[in-house]
Image (cartoon, rainbow over all chains, first blue to last red; front, top):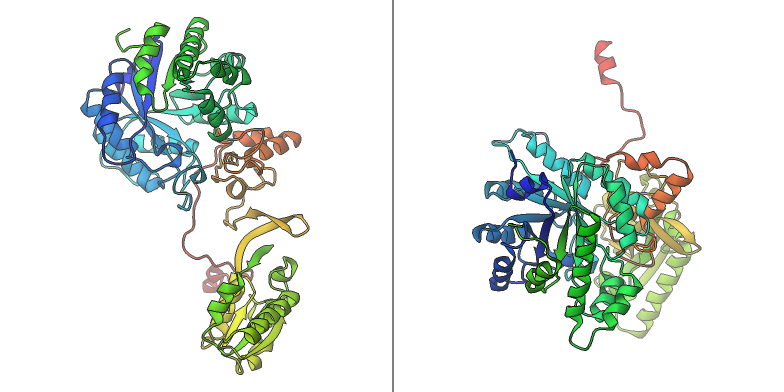
Length: 300
Length: 226
Ligand code: SF4
């Protein structure tokens, strides 16, 4: 039996659509709730980022609870950067007890890229080890081998970088994640179709679902900034040039156009089993993108 | 090798401010090689402090200089036991292990650190040291082509690169090579890429202060049999 509505869809042939929201820095969750309301009936699941870019925020688990309260399907993003194996397991137990079972296991960005640069980086577990830890919990034992009272089960996923310039080590790690039980992958933002085609062909030998990451660019400046500063983002010059062609104040429209074009192509060529849209603060445009791409929606 | 850097003079002045007679104590091994606390640095440091003494009103009155062969070995500390009876504090420019060996050996004597012990390093070029080992007690260098993932990857990842490396450089510092790209290249070169496919399980972080002995422990089981 599927553990969640999202997992059920993973087993189907449906073209999957997920998106993400970033919790606020502070306790005013109104905007996050607004984003949940906009997205919950348009996507198959909503990821909640875990202290995005290593900046302290309202927790991912708290965001997932809010999604649940509002009738949406959450994906708990979990990084190893800030919590050791005890804290990670405890959060997973709480998540499961509240019906949050979709988990995306990530190593996490470095502390240095965030706003608490002097903090102690934890990194007790990397993403592969975190997946193994989940398998242990599902076997009824904690990571220390002790018996659990009540056994949880999860639908776990991980990330992969199809456009990395040293691809082979990424693929080796991808295979370790598959072996550790990852059921779905949400990729880093993809912009290079040739590389996505190659990856798609390679990944088709594994029994996992791949959702291609779509980043919605908002301006040429942001594109350049992300290219230089955000780990895991490699933007081809053509994309930055294309963003430059946008009229002043119309960058987001251009970003939407690029996102729509990519989604259409991915669907048409079957380059992935779905898409994961990262609107980076512009979550409100996701329904528009889906409409234009003729895609998504839990009922489609 | 253990690598350290001398503390700022202002901090050293603050540390020794309550004392009059000070022994500046160097160490003849790592600290001499890395240029933080050998005979030469002991002499420079006490000259600098004496200059301060001549220019400003300070409490300290006299400095003695000495450099032992190894501060972290009890046997090399006997030579300073007489000097220690004539001073108020030891300003050690040995590493953290040296400072603590002194503190244990001379229970009534304040021992102050004159250096910040920084890392276990390998020489990249004369005078520049790269951190390469954290003495974790669980060496996996045989699996990672002689490049420590735990120390040299900014996140200590054991199972392969994160998505952050670009042009072979680490996401944390674009001047530093990504440890996992280096490991990958070298394993490839050695024809051992299959080692990258192993799953490396969760580490044992061994949080209790560790102790190791090179002297064989007596075989207690054997004794009781006899
Ligand atoms: S870029 Fe390489 S060295 Fe830096 S954190 Fe990622 S895997 Fe580790």
